[in-house]
Length: 155
Length: 194
Image (cartoon, rainbow over all chains, first blue to last red; front, side, top):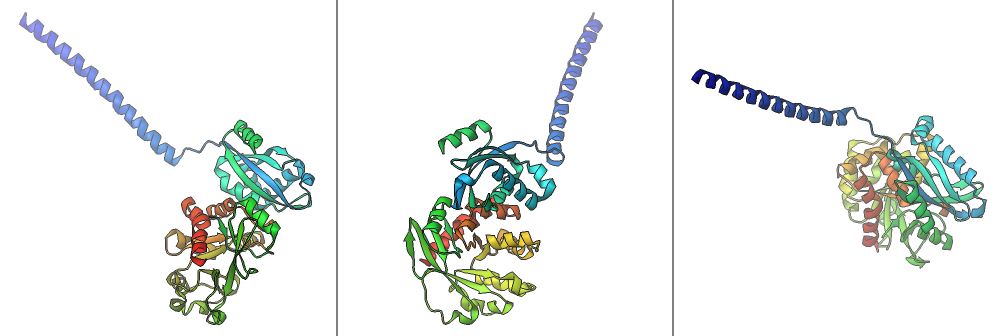
C-alpha cells in the first residue's frame, strides 16, 4: 500500500515538474523572439514609406500670380527635383502636386516622409514659374490628405 | 525675432513686404546707413570690414562682419576678438585651409557666416562644399558658432527660414543645431549689435 502511494506521489511530482519546465521554456522562447525582433529592427528592417502632404503658397514677386498655372508649377517642381537630386532621388521622393488653387496660389504637394528637408530645400530653389518671378513658401505639413485640404480651406 | 543678416538687395517696400511674408522681423543690409523701419520690418546696417581697413572703421552701430579672403586676415585675431560680430570666409580666394587657420577662427570666437545663395551656387556649379562641411563639423563639435543668411541680391532671392534649416540638415547637421543656426544665433547678434 505504501509503495503504491509513493509511486503515485512521485508520478504527480514528475508531472508537475514537466509542466513547469515546459512553461518556463515557452517564456524563454518568447524572450528570445523579442530580443531577436529588436535586433532585426535595428539592423535590417526598412522604414515603411509614408506620405506627407505639404501645403505651400506661391507668392509673385514681379508679375501676375494668375499667370502661374498648375502645369507650370508641376514642371518647375519636377525639373528642380530632377536637377537637384537626380533620377533616383526623384523616383524616391516621388513628389506630386495633388492640388493647386490658381487664384490664391496655394497648393498641396505629396512626398515620401523621409525626404522632408530635401523637399523644403527644393521648393526654395524655384524662382520662376511661367515667366513670373516667385517665392514658394512652405506653410504646413500634414500626414493625411484630408487634413491638408482642411488647412488649405482655412488659409 | 527672426533675422536675415545678409540682404544685399535694394531696401524698399517690396523687400519689406516679401520679408514680412517670409516671417522676418529684421534684415541687415549694407545699403542702410542707420536703422529704419519699413512696413514693420527693421532694416539695420551691415558693415563689411576687411583687415586692412578695419582699424580706421571706428565704432559703428550695426552688424560688423569681417571678410576673410586670405590666411593673413586672421593673424591678429586676438586683437579682433570682440570687435567683430561675425566672420565671413571667402573660400574661393582663400586656397587651402591649414590647422593654424582653423585654430584662429576658433580663437576669434565670432560666429561664422554661411550664405545660402553662395552654397546653392556652388551646388549648381558642381563645386565641392568641403570648407562648409569643415565648419559645420566644428559647429557640431561646439568649437565655433555658425549662422545662415540668405545673401539675396533681389527680393525674389530671399528664402524662407525652413529652407535654410533644410540646407543645413541636408548637409548633415543635427536638427537642433541647424535650428539654432537659423533662429537663435542671428537673433542674439541683432540684440548685441543694436
